[in-house]
Length: 321
Image (cartoon, rainbow, N blue to C red; front, side):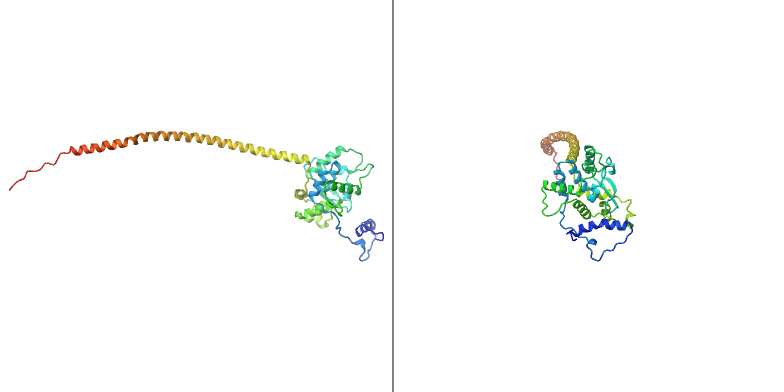
C-alpha cells in the first residue's frame, strides 16, 4: 500500500504468498482491517452490453480478434483461463453446437463447465487450419508462450473505437465479458449455482457433489438468445432458410388456391347445368301460363253457352176446382 497500489491490486499481489503458506500448512494471521483481506467493488469498468459485443465482432477485420470476442461472449472465464487454453484441450469441434466444455480453472482450481456456440466452433476450426503452429497455446505469441492480458485489453479498446463505442473514462477489459454474462444470466433467471459453474466461480462443496449431471446446455441456449452473435455467413444462411420456408409456404398456398379454383370451376359447371335445366322448365311453364287466359275465356264461353241451352222448367196447367 505504501507504493500507492489500490486495495484490489495489493490484495492480488499478496494472494500468491498466502497460498504458499497454506500449501505448507503454515498459519498466517491478518490483523483486523488489513487491506489484504478487503475487496473493493470496481465501479469504473465499462458496462458491456450484447449490442456492444456484436458491433465489435462485426467491425473486427482479423480472424483472431473475431475469435477473442466470440470466446469472450461464450465463456465467462477469467482472462488467465482463456490465455492458458492449449489447442489439445479443445473439445471435439465436430459435435453439434452448443459444444459442452469442462475445464479446471487456473486461478482457483475449480471446475468450469460451459459451452461453445456455433459461431465460436466455426471460427475455431478456421483459426486452427489457418494458423498451424508448434506453439501449444491457442492464442499464441511469436515465442513459445501465449499473448498477454495487456495485448487483449488493447485490442478490445481498438475494436470499441472502430465500432464507435464511447467508453469515456470507463475501462474496457476482459473482465467486462464476465460481468456481462453473469448479469445477463441473472436477468434470465438462471439458477445461481449453474451461473457459478458456467463462469468458473466456486460452488459450495456440498452442492457441487450433486451438480455432476447439471445440464448447462439448456442454460447456455437460453443465455444465447440474448447474447448470441452470428457471422455474416450464418445470417445469410438464416435468410436463405427463411426465404426457402416462405417459398414453400407460398407454393402450398398456390396449390390450395388451384384446388379451390378447380372445385369452384366444377361447382360453377354444375350450377350452370342446373340453371339451364331450370330455364327450360321455366319456358315450359311459361307456355302453359300463356294458354291460361285463352282457356279461361273458353271455359267462360262454354259456361255461358250451357246456361243458354238449359231447358226452362215446364209450367203446370191451372186446375180450377
